[in-house]
Structures are given as C-alpha cells and as structure tokens.
Length: 477
Image 1: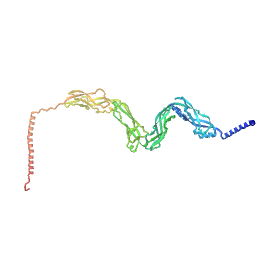
Image 2: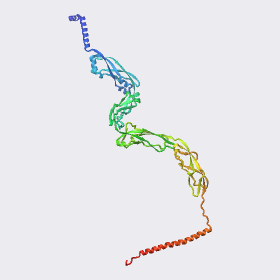
Image 3: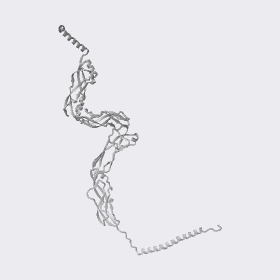
Image 4: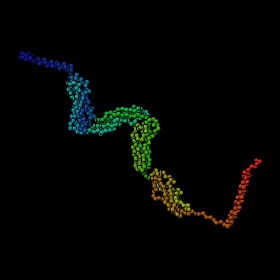
C-alpha cells in the first residue's frame, strides 16, 4: 500500500500537468467540432390568463399595443443546439402572464415580466444572455361591452341594368367588448363586400370590424363572433319618382308654404314586367286639416311598395316628408260695387225701388292669395227690402266674402227710395161713340146669322149626295 502511494506521488507535478493538458485538449476538440455561439431570436408577445382580469370586471386598455409588441432575446449555446432551436423558432413564445397581477383596480398601471420560453423539442443547453424588453407596462381599465348591429358596406357596382337588394346578415348583431374608454369610440361594426359587375345573387363570409366616427378602425376590442354570413340579392332595377300630396285645409289664417320630401327618387328592383308598368310611387296623403304648424312624417318605403317590388341597396329605408305651415300675411284692398249689381231681396210688385248711391266702396283685409281671387262682380252684395214701406229707407247690406277675407269697419248701408207704382185707369166714352159702338154690334149680329145659314146649306147638299151614292142597285144592274 505504501509502495502504491509512493508510485502515485512520484512525479506528481508532471502527472497533474498532463491531466490539465488533456482536459484543455478535450475542450479544444469540442469547441472546434461543436463551438459555442450566440443568436438573437424575436417573437411576438402572447398574453395568458387574461381571464383573471375579466373575472374582476377589468381588462387591458393597451391590449392592442401588447399584442403587437416584439420581444428579442440573445441566446447562447452550442452551434448545433442553436441550429436545432432555429428549426423550432415558431414554437418560441414571449409570454405575459396576467395571473400574476394582484390587488389591481381600474386605472392602475403594472409592470409584468415577459417570459421568453423555449420549446422542449429544442433540447437544453441554452442560456439567455439578454432580453429586450424584460417587462411590459400593462394599463388596467374597467371592462365594458355593448351589442351593435352589423352594417354592410358594398363596394363596387352591380352589372348594367341591375341593382343589389338590401343585404341579409347572419348574425345581424355582435357584442363588442373592451376597455370602457375604447368601447366609447366604437360607433359602428361593419363588414365589406366587393361587387364586380354582379348579375347574380352574392353569398359571402366576412369578418366584422369596429370603426370610430371618423371611419378609422378601433383596435383593442373583441367580438363574440369572428365571421358573419352575408347574402345580397341582385335583380333588374329602375329609378322612379316619389310623389307627395296633401288633403284638407290649414287653420284660418295659415297656409302651406312649402312641401319638402326626401328622397325625390328611389332605386327599386323587381321583374322586368312589373317595372315596365311602374312610373312613380305615391307616398301616403298628408292631412293638413286645421294645421297651424309644420307637419313632419317618416314613411317606411317597404310598406308602400307594390307587390313584387323591392328597394335597391342604395335606397334609404324611409322617406321624410315636411309640410311647412306658416301664418298668412294680411293685406288690404278696396273694391267698388256698382249699385246695379246689388241684389234687392223681398221686392213687392206694387213698389218701385231706387238706390240713391251709384256705387259703394268696400275696404277688405285678408291674405294675398285670397284677395287676389276677388274680381269685379265676384263679391255678392244684397239688400233686404222685405218689410220696407213707401219712403226713403236706409238698408244695411249683406256681403258674402270668401274665406280668409274680412270687411274693415262696419257693414255699409245704402239708401233705398220706395214709391208706389201708378195703376192704369179706363177713360169714359162720349155718347156719340157709344151709339156707334152699339150700331156696330147690331150690324155684326145679322152677318153672323147669314154666315151660319150659308154654312148649313153645303152640309145639307153633301148629305143628299151621300144618300144618292148609298141607294141600293136596281135589278137590271
């Protein structure tokens, strides 16, 4: 045993030197065949356990920023190991774990570690020399959500002579979630559909996108559905007018100043046979009876279209009608009525009636439109003389004025002079004339008698002739 120790210790210095040289040579060989080097790998951040915030009614305000954040790490390992890791580089993950957030509330900002995780399939022997960034700033805010309808933006045009119908969407709405300050900026959710001179129905699947009031996409929101189905019918089209009418009359002193409606024309679709016979669409009549202020109505166009006719995609669903009612401005006008045109009512045959005035003047006030309708002789004027007797009488006139026209001042009157008509009398005859008359009458009587006899004689002769004609024939005959 002692000899063995002596042999081991003999030339111990040389032996240790040889060992060190051997180890150094081994490392040199390894480094030559499998050298150690460094490489930089970059990966996009992945967020995990964000439900830990959602359960607390919280969310990440700068979620969109974190989702787009790039993390770079410098790794050290043998070249062969790094080559192997490169093959699995898509499996490298830069992870932010939100389960590590504790005692957080809305409005807080926290710095969370970013873990650069290598896949197990790449093996071991890797060292992270450096990483940038090592932490991520997380802004926490109250979680908000709202359900919104999905709009369809149709880009392009249908084929010539065709139009698109209103799009049908399934589902028709989506719930948008995110930080309350972000959700407040979301004004619409929209899908885009491209038309390429289509002449047949279109069916597509599209992704809904949130936009703000300026049409800019809102980042950092999530939706409960990522795909929607859109179908758009394509049919023959025609542009027709929208017609508007009114019924009734506004209240006294008011008038229709203007009728405004929009749109004036609409794009409709249907079969060619139906469209050829359709020239215009008439909106429901607006009743302005006794109106004193503007009347506004909204009409759903789908409810008034004829059967088999539909609205084109570029046509609004409603028509707006405004009938502007305004108070009429009153003007004054003076007209002259000739006495000859005044009608006397209740005249008696035994009286004669004379008007002292040749004419009368009437001062009228009313709307310009109503006064413009008044012409000479168009205003009936009457005077009632039924109970009047002989003499000079003052009679109030009865004037029938049109609507929206009134008389200024008191009702005028006229002076009527009434006199009795003269009765015709027989003049007494003188004696000589009376004798001549009697003689003439006596002379007429014999003449009448002779004339009667002469008339009877032909009648008798005629009777004899008739008898001769009617006598029976003789035997010889």
